[in-house]
Length: 198
Image 1 (tube, helix red, strand yellow):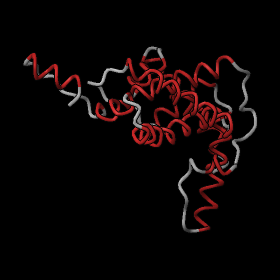
Image 2: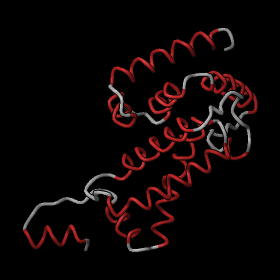
Image 3: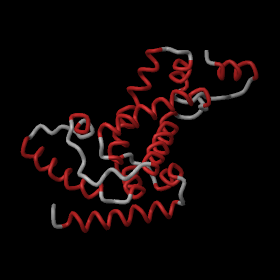
Image 4: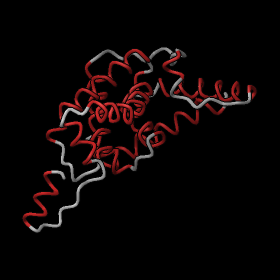
């Protein structure tokens, strides 16, 4: 029985635990299996987000490890009554944004096609479909790489992470209308760049 459940039983409070409270508690108790579960659960999404924003598999791998370390370090302060995923996503977005703002822009070249980078994409069984999809993805990735970093992040969060403008606004710390403007401008730029190529 978790501490929160014990407190609620003793005090007669109706405190509901979050969906991930058991996993968090087991990680905090240094359960290696629970820690591995947490890392497996979030590493792919964190890597994918970092890769889409940096375009560099090695840098995305480094960022993923750094975010996971921050998550593990911050778990003692995590409110177990809340779901874990939004909290992890917020840490990932802020960490990647901080890295992008600190360092020089590294995305002038097209995205890599290394094995680690290709794990982000879904494999296609039909070679003709795979070639067409790969070419379309390559053109889209090149166009995305030319977007300003914050627009690129807003687009990634909207269309690849399926977040609302309100959620993106909260994650990025900007007004919702700013997010909507970034996404609108990014879509216009992408439409112009890709209209003749696709």
